[in-house]
Length: 388
Image: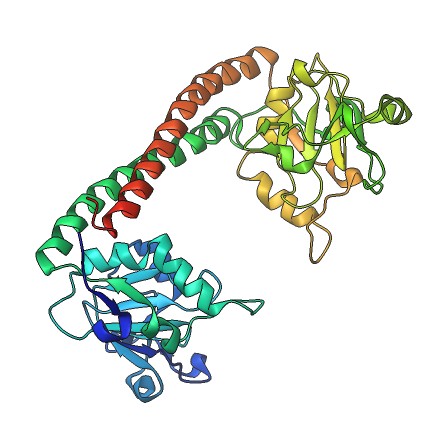
């Protein structure tokens, strides 16, 4: 199907936002204040911005840009180009671009999907390339070309994409809820209101040590002993990518970090505090710049200790122990002093049984989420080529 191609500037008036300065002098709690749109308002809204957390005094209007219901706004730096539809009147700062439809050729739902598509994003990115932090400006947006089907066709396409997007969002919400359910059960069973012994990590492990922390450029071999890195630990799982190996000689030279089944590995630099339990498949392997803990079998199951580290309240603990300005880092000596609950083993096993059930559901939910994402991407790709 052949549709005319037009520049966004032919369909929208595009202008940059503005901010009265210093902004704190213009913020107000008065009900007569003007809605002040921030990135956090958009993130919470998803598609349509219907409320704002802050307002500015009307005197600031001459230094900003007013927006109205039906207007589009685009973030113009960092994760730039994401579209939102205004559901209320408000004002935008210079981190936003205003796109106001010029006439009746625009269906807002169609353009919401079009502006958020990979094709339009890539057009924005190619024109904004060259800077460390990419920025959009009104000139870049005006010159990007897009397909413009008849209004009724826009509405038909938007209806299909809305349904696929709703399914995608539902699958994502289900996955997120399941992903936090294990943490909620842990808190219910072992949180602060429960009377279990609380012990320091060094009291409940027979070993706590660091993996090798030297340079890696000369230690890798094409085949040999799998070498576990921080990137292999994500979402409480150890997933080796088959790309990093060390020699048997290196492995024996670094005996203290040779892995045993049930050991708990903790990321020490980067996404600090993330943990995984060593499965039987990785017995005898080694690791780089990870904290390795062997739980005292009579006190703690390794999977329980890993779950304790992943409890929501532990994020604050890790944040308080963090060192390093650019790259977050944990010191082994500090991790030794972290306090964890030590309930009876039968209660630990009861929790882990419930968690395994959740994990099995989580796998199905993750597959469903991935399928919904792929469906939406395929429909979106076809929609703007006239193939739906």
